[in-house]
Amino acid sequence: MFSSSLYDETTFYDQFTRDLLHCSSEVVIDCPFITSERTRTLYPIFERLINRGIRVYVFTRDPKEHLESMEDQSESEIRRFEQLGVQVFLCLGNHHRKLAILDRQILWEGSLNILSQTYSREIMRRIDGQDYAIEMFNFLRLNRFIGGL
Image 1 (cartoon, rainbow, N blue to C red):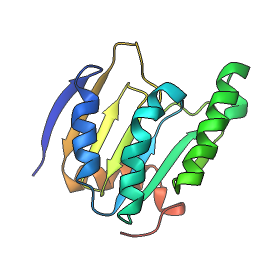
Image 2: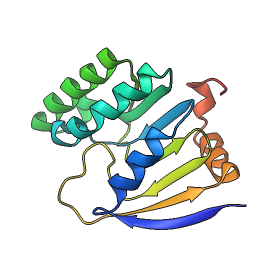
Image 3: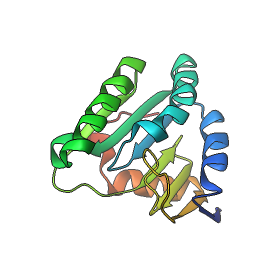
Image 4: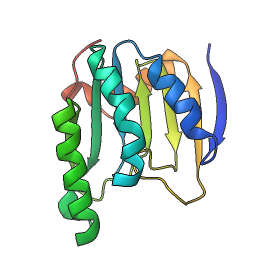
């Protein structure tokens, strides 16, 4: 059994934050772009999660594949994530997926860049259902990088 609901750029972060704060073991975020403005709002949440022993993983585009202005910002934020305890994986080849898997129970997917969204109009679907979250986890073959829960 699962439930599904839709969010846009004005409603996504409130629900996503609630979901993050209810995590008990693992957060996986797959997002091509990282900006200082957006991550500034997420760092305190990630810090709380890591302090509670929750593993946080970010898959993102290699900063060298960005324009120079975005490259510097992305590199800086990746370093900051790593200092916080977030494990960051760099993806090559025009990485463009936008999703999150929380405790392998909740799947967020859509067009919104979770770690960079600011002004654009976007949509995200929240699926609360372990089968769907694990299906995505397996489809992306994340077990190559992340162990079991």
